Image (cartoon, rainbow, N blue to C red; front, side, top):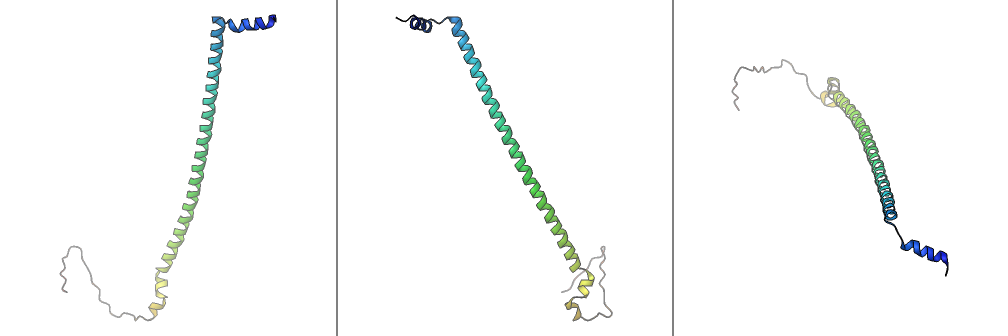
Length: 121
């Protein structure tokens, strides 16, 4: 019989309480270490995800601000065009004004705030 095989068999059968406690302690330390690494890795992934969401929202906000500036510029240009078309020179130079006659001796209606009026139809 091989003495090493017997010795090896003997060691696997004999386990002291101290050795078992130490192995359990090492197991819990390793498992705690692995759990903490998992938690840290998941927090890192969560942090990168939050950064990505914020960057995407920032890009969307900048894009909307650019669109807002363009629309405001277009609105101002349209306001200028409206004011140009409503100006007195534009109205007097239009083709519709050429067919009208000038008014002589116009009568004006003056409305006062403190007077009551009666309208006859």
